[in-house]
Image (tube, rainbow, N blue to C red; front, side):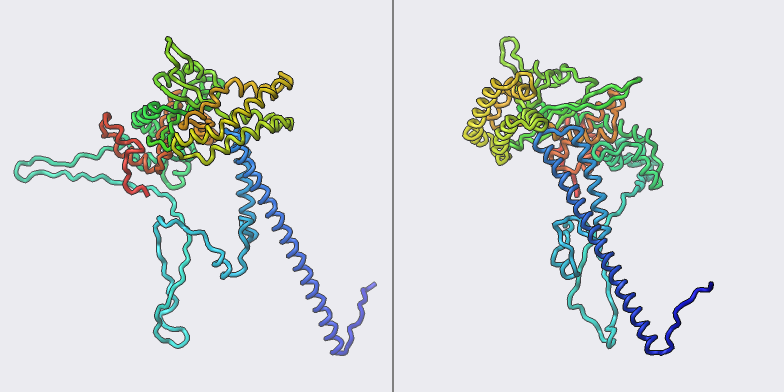
Length: 535
């Protein structure tokens, strides 16, 4: 049967009323839909904001764990990396929704409120390119002449991608009109004789690999996108030759480090692929830094590569060292602390309280032990005493420690003794207590000498760049490759310790070192050299 519909009224006013009612109903439906969409958008924005805050708090928590309990494990480092990536994604999502990336930053509802809230100030040292947007030559209303009564300025941050350029060294050949003798200026020395790279390009490749952790194959791909084909093997050749050229500088830095009276030492594994199964080499760090006790000698760090972790390596490196050594409980250092030939030991051990604290933390995290928590609180008081002492003269630090830290240490020693007597002897808590008591003299040595530190965290911070780099280039490649990496790290990280831009420093050094007298290599040390135009 054919469909039937209600006949429309023929009265015009009735039709108008029907149309008006339908329009009103459609408008109401549209408002309901818009309200629902707004609620959905608000809910979505709220979820993004909450997720953003959760990820931010996770990152802060992971960082605090690393700070509070000394050297981070590979697991914590990986956790922080993954959380940072998740945080970046959420911040980008928040920006796409028009939300402030920082939840503490209010959403500006108008241009005026955005101005009042303030815009991030851009660094003053950056060059400025000014673009003037003049509106009209004459008044658009009456055609009259215009005069400037003020101006509005808004700065935006731009980035000009790095680019290659070719430097042409032109040496005119001149002949004498009288005697026909030939005259020509000598060719300036280059870091790599008859090579393609300038000092600036070599510095860039080295910093990208050892400071920014970009493997050479990735650099090669980046350069190819810029229209310059530089094979990985060619870049590797440049790195090897530059490292050989700067080896005397790395050795000079090492001599300065080992001439100190207080050192921090640590090591980290690095995979070295030999034939068949990869073997594990080690990168060792020896740090000299007198800034915490207002010392006057410049800071520097020495890295060494060894194919294994045998104690003979640090013993050989520190054979001529005399003084105090901050280190963990690695047995390979023990021979350095022994008296020989009727003479007192040349090296005094300074143990790391952060290592002790970490053992109690692990026990508390696993079992919730109140005794472990008590130990953590007592050790925490020792670190609280230390925080304001950074940068104080050694004697003032010693006096404060004697007055404030020594009583806490006495209480801690008594607590460890009584606790050990009343707990099972084979548990992890007992092991943590025995570890602390067995190293007590070395752990408390810092109280009597203001040059010393409560922990070895300084060396562990110096290891951090190696741990980051290891996740981007897993293999040293060979023993020679490991030694090369250690030398370059020595130069780069020592430059950073002396507040130099490492790329500007390497560029300047590589531009001079080929012709520099070997007996004046000290002129190129990061705390002596003057770098023009570093900014």
